[in-house]
Amino acid sequence: MNPKDRMTAVARRLRTHYGPVRPPRPEPPLDLLVRTILSQHTSDRNRDAAYAQLREAFPTWDWVATARTKAVADAIRGAGLHHQRAARIQDVLHRVQDERGTLSLDFLAKLSDDRAVEWLLSLPGVGKKTAYVVLLFGFGRPFFPVDTHIARVTQRLGLWDGRGDPHNLLAPLVPPGAELELHLQLIRLGRELCRPRAPRCPDCPLLGLCPSGKQSVQSPPGKETR
Image (tube, rainbow, N blue to C red):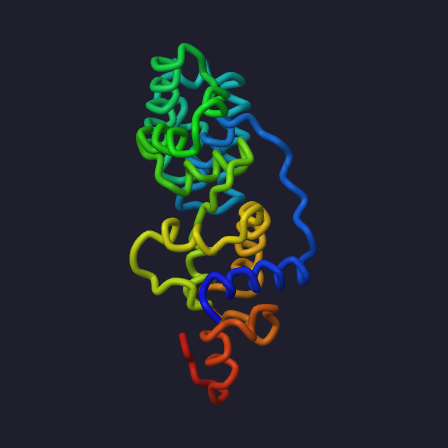
């Protein structure tokens, strides 16, 4: 089975196993951008707590942009690397304000996919995963963000070898229109079954498609394959 057909089979099996995904509640793209910056190298729980504390301390993005950096850092301390993240968030807000005259990313809706990605990637500290999250969840654009869970699962599935940029390598394999659902379901699989340590391969709906999983279940008891 070639990689594109395998990814199509993965999407089909995950939908059968988990059911259709209900799209998340719409969120203003700038809110989504800041939340995603907070999510880098931390857990969802820490991200959500830090974001809630930030919005409680500073109800508007104008307040965040003009506040002392230390005050912003104190508000997001729970996310870790809070001084670095605070400076980055303020740099992004200043850039948006300076270029657009308002703290909003709604203008991206009028840009082509390529131009929108290019602009987001020009922001300080914004990489492909963050840019793609904003475009996928904020604008419904056909982008496929790759986080650590997706990278691990797809590598075990043999869809890429761990070298190069997974965004460039995996995006052409994703069935058109399946970007959001497949993104969320691969993350769920990575958290629940295809974990970094002690993956639950016998319980995985993708076992028949997974070279790594097949090797694991065929190994003698007690032998570690990862």
